[in-house]
Amino acid sequence: MRQRKLGSQGLAVSEQGLGCMGMTFAYGPADGQEALRTAHRALELGVNLLDTADFYGPHSNEEFVAKVIADRRDQVIVSSKVGNEVSPDGQITGKLNGRPEYIRSTVEGSLRRLGTDRLDLYYLHRVDPDVPVEESFGALADLVAAGKVGYLGISEASAATIRRAHAVHPLSAVQTEYSLATRDVEANGVLDTVRELGIGFVGYSPLGRGLLTGRIRNLDGLAEHDFRRVAPRFQKENLDANLHVVEQLEVLAAVKGITTGQLALAWVLAQGEDVVAIPGTKRVTYLEENIAASAVVLDADDLAALDQIAPHGSLVGDRYPAGAMATLDG
Image 1: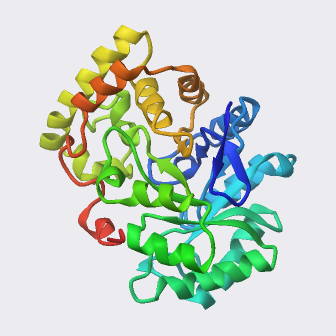
Image 2 (image 1 turned 90 degrees about the vertical axis):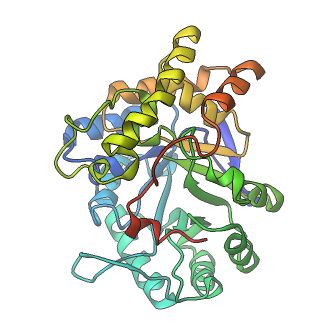
């Protein structure tokens, strides 16, 4: 697994990380033992970046990651996030909270659940519109100074907010959804801004929450509480339209002798040496398929064909329901 640099502060990670959220949260029940085998297999295959958040579960995802890293902490880059408010009794409140006092108290819980004395990478998960981002990053910078956090990042932030946060303390990473299904960062200035400032980019949901694998043709097989049951892109009329794009990807993948998911992942990795993908899966089979995408080479003709098939804005439907869309900065 090749390594890529995130930012200019010294952080280097595998070009594919592992998004751990779905192992305990958002996509229905998981087989805990299979999820654990999947995470350990990822590390065996050279993945060293595990991505979690206190919000996932809430809390159970960090506890899961603690089991994965217990006997190999120094081999793993652990990233977590703060900002989607979780109450003291462990309930998701539906609010954003970027207040310095909340950040300072919340990190202690994350460290305890993860069984570690430091977070390698800590993101502001969402930007609280009621708190100047400078105040949030002042608190996060204090955590770096105290040795509790190694590097800082921000998730789902606008170009202007990224600049403001970076001015308080250098950012190593900006994390935003990025795939052939979601190319917003190419159009809204985020990708240009991180490159101008020397910040690394981490793309989550690089498989479009499974849409780009071609395995989801309807919602029938999804668990009752699977997020995709309420996600606009997966609603029937939208999904039917979006599958026309997926079908074209399937044709190109077949020509290259790879899966559609591998094609989609290879495209993300081909967007630059400063781009890292964090696909999520809870099964060893799919993990190994994803890892193999790092060996796929896309030439100029392939990339041009993909731009034709799935340009910015080609998919129908927002990527989140209205309430969650309202939490995105900018």
